[in-house]
Image (cartoon, rainbow over all chains, first blue to last red; front, side, top):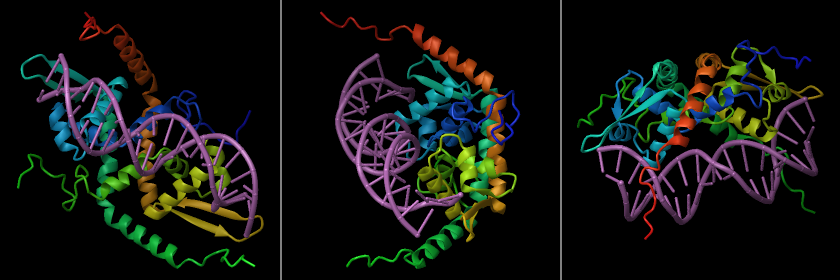
Length: 142
Length: 142
DNA sequence: CCGTATCCCGTCAGATACTG
DNA sequence: CAGTATCTGACGGGATACGG
């Protein structure tokens, strides 16, 4: 049957569909810290836990661990433990991790480059909303 | 002072910093339906509310409205009302909207292209976790 | 140093029903 | 058609403290 839309051709997989597995991938990227982790590691250099933690200003250890585990599970980064003392754990993007890392970085670059325009748009939108006519305009009391 | 990291050069703006305004942009993109809206509109063709709603399988009207409003506020899309009857409202990406839309699409494309590898990685990760030695290995009872 | 264990709160998102 | 109004629950994320 025809839904009225052509599927985007990738072996019959369509992100727009409710139960499409790619949705999970998107929602992973969508989680609060994922993009920053990917960008931090994008150059391929391994980073230690504490190093990432310092870089991602404001992240708590719990959440950082969650994020890293999730990414490790998807195969975009590896976790390597050096059983030295003190303990040393290094995180590094895999091949596909670097691919998506590059893509994500282009988005953060875009955000930074267009920040001024975005802030201006926000300001205008908010001001316009403030002046808006009350629409249904109350006074429905007797 | 030196934080030990070079700032990524974009007029002194650094995504990694806690209060950097670009964080807000990232978190907008991170919200569940944003990427799909951007990809749906990426080709520049305006779409009606119901059309988007059908395309984004599973989205509820409330959430779709929220998402569209947020994007409109950032200036990445416009909302145009045609006061005909029945009512007709069209959403369309702005110039900067199409820019970021293209970037996001490259990510969804990547997701679809690498889906098999990701699913394999997930499977392996989960199996490994299942076999994992109990680490501290219980039996701390008398 | 590298995490885990708790506790807790806010917000986002879903369901459902209704209006201009 | 294009939304709004409510209510509700889940869970992501934060703070804090502790363990290997």
